[in-house]
Length: 305
Image 1 (tube, rainbow, N blue to C red):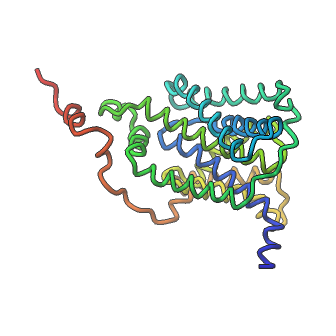
Image 2 (image 1 turned 120 degrees about the vertical axis):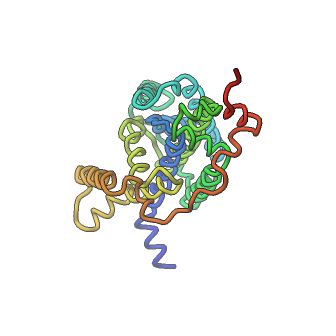
Image 3 (image 1 turned 135 degrees about the vertical axis):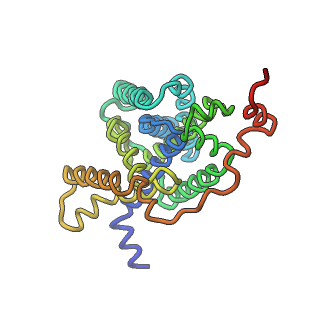
């Protein structure tokens, strides 16, 4: 027990950030599972963090109420943004969501209630390590079950071929909007927990750098299964401490090592770190519940005439 206490005293902060970053990586995983390359999840985390922080600091809202409000407000922003933006695809969608992130950052810099460029300070430290990992377990369980649900197969069909999915009668707009909203909810929750962990939040913490980092977590860990982003977040978050432990100063060197790791994964492990572990084969009928029997028959049968 004494050893565990000493370990937590030294690495407790690292464990907290691994949990938060894993949640953020999972938020992007949901969007990527529907074939949508979004760079706006950092902005949703910022919205959730600022919402929760403002409620706690200015209105003395209970911790759980602040977390719920931050998550819901980010989810609402994701829903409102997703309806028009998800008509775009590929790099155009990425640029649109990245632009949204810059808008959120600039607004936070110029508002008084957010603390401006100096950030929102005085947020009480209410996020505990056990709570972070409890939320991570619950979110992971939800996503693992979602993967084999009707909704999950809808995401998978869109990622495989959106045009073919639409031709088979899958409502692609509905499924993409749901994925975008779920990702925003998880990102907002992670941002709200981060705000109550770090005592303060600043606009630069939720900018372009975080957006790219979340994408790196997913690429390095693997985007095919829910635990892939967690593996990527664990490795890249712990990397500075690993480098420091072997005598390499973190900072610019860490960024170079991140780039090397990303390049090696792309070249030798295109499916990410999850390809090092055995995975279960797909189970059940792939799209048995995506369409009703009548809809399936109508969509697959040749046109009369």
